[in-house]
Image (cartoon, rainbow over the protein chains, first blue to last red):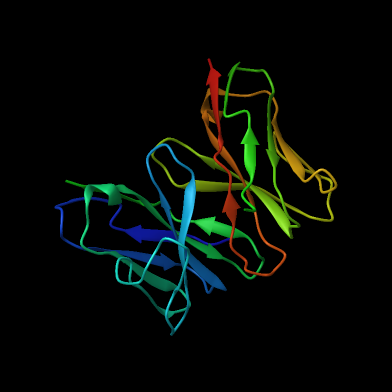
Length: 113
Length: 112
């Protein structure tokens, strides 16, 4: 299994500011992803965090708005830039282990005022 | 889209009854996973069933997979109030992308 921690667990931010979310997993994993879950909706994949290279973004998400880093096999960050109230959501880090099972972090609950 | 679709969208049962949720998907998969999400919390992985498996059990959970119909079901037996949560099925892609596509979930309420 994989134990994932995210920081912060929640935050309230002002419009126009940026927030960086950290994801740490307790073992090496093959892949790391970032998801968003807006209120009342299902999960949406934002991007795949690639170690040592630029993340792969899904349709509708761009690097300028959601820059992602993955400097090693167990750590990644997601930044939500120039935030607006529409960015209020739960942001989840997810990993795939070498046993091909996907695990999710506890999520970061973001409220933008 | 390969997104799974769960049905029903919402289910309300009495404690002790069984709950059955269904999931349909559109393309070939490597495996299908079921997750639970309690309100305001992160997703919890419940069970993974591979495309060459037909049935799998874990405690009070029973999952079936019918690849010919591109559907899966999750059965929770002898439900408890603590089972109240949203349940999602998630499929991966045989193209090897190794990420998951989630359905909209079934909201299960177990009444004590």
